[in-house]
Length: 245
Image (cartoon, rainbow, N blue to C red; front, side):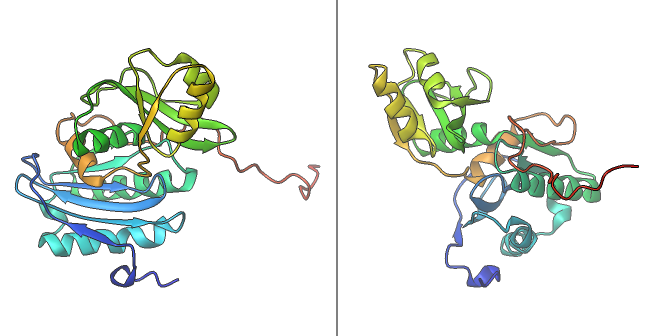
């Protein structure tokens, strides 16, 4: 596959008004896309490249393209933002490592935001919900990554990896909608329990502009670190291991 960014058929670019009064470079590689945005008080420049793997190859050329389109260099960035998970083991590490490196090189702060919070912010930005909602992403192995948010996107519980039936059984009565790739799964599980949960948006990854907006209102703390809600699927091979003396 041609990895040249300009040739990629799924590259999305757009500009629109944004609220942060600082210049933020936001990166998401945690799920099935490689996304970069630069947001300041006047505009945004962003790229979203849907992809299941290969984020490490695409990310830095994508960052360079967005910087060039914005007409700025790294020295103009006030802070960096990155999704820290949950997500794919490799994808999360690619984004976190890149942002930590850029922050170290420039002396600017880096903000880590959970993937579920960024997806909730993406949903709120698309049209303010009228009631609390759940974000549920397919985590395979009959589990979902899930968290419940208020209508304005504030977390109401902790992010977790949980069986979809357990999640459905524990949802509060005022949670009537779910967004994310596991929305249909949660709706079916809720129906089996005699209640209705409507899958309103099958969001597969966060909007990096929404990620930038979250980072703009957070205080920098420690360097971003991956958020893993369960152990990786990969396991060390033992069949060919040499016996120790």
